[in-house]
Amino acid sequence: MGYACPDTSDCDKSSYGFFNQMFSAARQLVWYTNPGSSHYKKYPLGETTVIQYKPLTNCGGSGVFIENVATHALYNYTPVQPNAAALANMYGTGDSCSSYGNRNFWRLYSDWFGNPTGTPIPNPQRIAGSDRYDTAAAISRSSFDGERRVPVAYVVTGEDFPDALAAGPAAAAQGGPLLLTNPGYVPDPTTAELKRVNPQAIVVVGGPAAVSDAVVAALKTIAPVTRIAGSDRYDTSRMVAQHAFGAATSVYIATGLNYPDALSASAAAGKSKIPVLLVNGANNGADSDTVNYLTSRNVTTVKIVGGPAAVAPGVESGLKARITKVSRLAGETRELTSVIINRDAFPNATTAYLATSISFPDALAGSAAAARAGSPLYVTFPGCVSGELRSELKQRLNVSSLRLLGGPAALNENIARLGGC
Image (cartoon, one colour):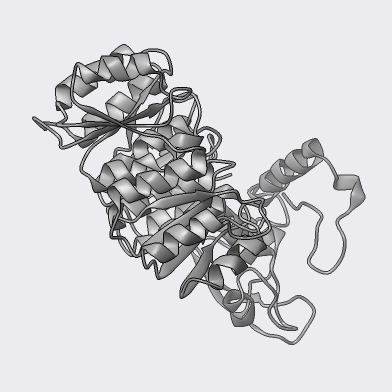
């Protein structure tokens, strides 16, 4: 909380610790609001008081109207205000007349909790079922409500992510939902939803180890089935791209060794009708199969999603040697990367989808629904949202609705309030 931590020197060690900080702050508030204390008459309520920019200097100040007890207490504790230079460099330093205590309080509060007088996002909608299969079916129902027959439905394993990552954009581009199956049997919610949307065709992504022949046989009783399966996850992603995006001249490239970056790109890719290709992000260079795919289809634009730890610099340089336009969309964390990907792809949106960043099934099923709605899908911490994500949702996009994918164990109720981390 910063009690006994002045701008001009180190914190007082005697005030270290959670208890000391909480107790001291509460004590100060009592003193400041006690009519018998020497602090009470400073910065009187309902009046304008000159607040200096820096103590004990000739830097000057300006009048501040003290509207409430909270502001009265704030200036009693930190009796200076930020000058124009401090405000112009909100996350850094200003000039020799700058003070930062109250500025930093405002900045941190706003990053964590948003504008306390701002308009909240109305009625966040949670889309969830009893398990990942039921949740995927619920997502499909929310996206295809009232549909009598969809052109296609994609079905992937709900137990692992590699083969499934490329399927979300393909499902969206071809106008259908993405549903999950157990490798050995078709769960009841999946069967029921397939029968409801009555697809003209079903595309299974992944080989028999991911989706067994018994599952394919069961699906064939609902609609004709095509299985797309390559020699590995990377080959499978290329085959999905060829099947659904044969003419696309832009692609997203993501590591196939983990799921968050590919899932964050899936809604953006599906909306733009371009594929997500998986690569081994740990390689020192771009593999020949990926390069051959890109050049044989005259791909001119590649967007790498994820930082150098996800997709190595050698992969990027290898692609730049063969492709006209290669860029990287990356943040310091998977959650910030998600913000950057969607900032690039969605200049505007009225609805946003949120899914947990520490598991894949909900975001996997949600990617097709988000893309169909023309909405971004963000992966976030299960219990809070970052300041960057809140800023995206409430300021840049000013979305009017949220879709929370999964139950409270996946995204707790603090997410619905856009509670900060």
